[in-house]
Length: 193
Image (cartoon, rainbow, N blue to C red):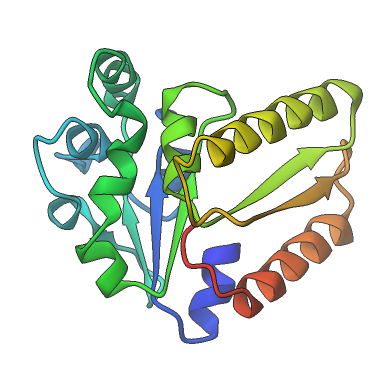
């Protein structure tokens, strides 16, 4: 994956799981039953990011885990002032000082958790299937990114990139896509996706 490729190049990577399904967390080897604090507590200010980050089995990659509690957190954030900046504020300082790259995995919806991820990001990589409905969703996401930029919510978000995925994955299609994304990642000056 992208984090693994960056770690192989000697970069320190923090993977932030902003999806309540926690696939990134599980995919990086964590057992959801052992997670005591997650991004849910960070976003509402109950704990700091540094307190929840867990090293993975891959050297150079740490994860800020997610749990199903993140679903309830999204509802709690709706009434918060500055709600779309919660993740950016959590990443400022400690995370920016300790990691070369921060990769934010967002849910496949345009809800408040995804908005937080977009506001916090310097750049965006969008994996998208080459199907009609996926492309409609892609168009909606690009509109949201442009709205965030135009409102000045993310002054550093200067670029986004699309990684097309075949609806029936071929052995080489995903690898080519992720290789090109990793190459792009190591040549860009951005740090947070």
